[in-house]
Amino acid sequence: MTKKEVLERIQQLKKERNAIILAHNYQLPEVQDVADYIGDSLGLSQTAAAAEAQVIVFCGVHFMAETASILAPQKTVILPEIGAGCPMADMITASELVEWKKNYPGRKVVCYVNTTAEVKAECDICCTSSNAVRVVNSVDEEEILFVPDKNLAAYIARKTNKKIIAWDGYCYIHNKILPKDIRERKALYPQAEVWAHPECRPEVIDLADKVLSTGKMVKEASETSKKEVIIATEAGIIYRLKKENPNKNFYPAKDLALCSNMKKINLRKVLTSLEKMIYKIEVPQEIGQRARGAIEKMVKI
Ligand code: 13P
Ligand code: SF4
Image 1 (tube, rainbow, N blue to C red):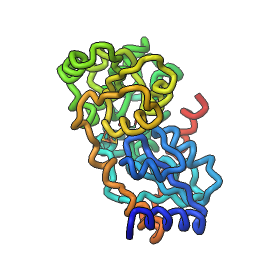
Image 2 (image 1 turned 90 degrees about the horizontal axis):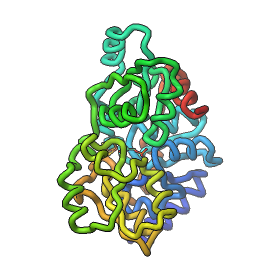
Image 3 (image 1 turned 135 degrees about the vertical axis):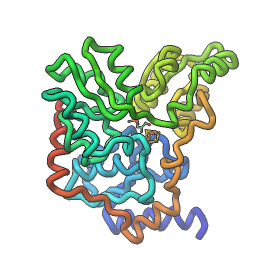
Image 4 (image 1 turned 180 degrees about the horizontal axis):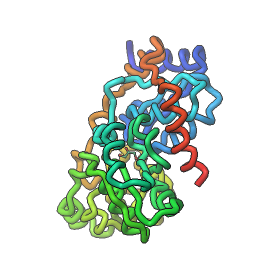
């Protein structure tokens, strides 16, 4: 099949199945190009819940499709590649969290959306990279447990007066970006601003002009008067930034900051997922209900 034929078949199946294609900002260009909506993890889940379509083809990683399924349990959510996981989300299990909580009786737990449904079910409130500080400030406690990202926790701690006790998790992609990478890029592009994702190390955050979720990077890119920006996050987002802002230059802080899980989905797999309706992401009802409580509290904020 030629690429043109694949694209035509995808469009035909979308109609037949009443499906919509959602893609995260880190997805391959060919997947972003076929998507009906591209966004960050929160935006994608909310779009899935609000969509009229019955089938959601979710091009991202497993926890994101799970979150969409929790928010839209009456819809069919399919992840075109079942092996597309998030290593950071897998750094804590529900039983590990239950054990850890015993050391801090009565403390509230905030979980990053990059967690499994089972972990969310054990937490009080969820947050994303775009609302983490607001969510933590909304919790009526001085000392808060935070899972799983220690870098995001360190960023929040700088922005609040609360004491944050963090799980020792991190994103290995964002952790690859080092202060020397930023300095080298700054030497090449001295006029450029630096925007960093809050999953970056604190030493990288120190060198950033702005700290933004991927969704906020996309928004800021269209609004900024800056013509050059160094982007400290997964390099796949550069494609969208350049496509939507052809008169501005975006440089990845590190070319090799690529999430292999995000790149497991391609156009062919999108087609196969629609043909065979695989892989359905379903969350057991009891876990889904408890996880939904933590997500809905966040949405209210
Ligand atoms: P965003 O919600 O900012 O898109 O981040 C998701 C993620 O996995 C970043 O690595
Ligand atoms: Fe997970 Fe990091 Fe990949 Fe985001 S970039 S999906 S946090 S491994």
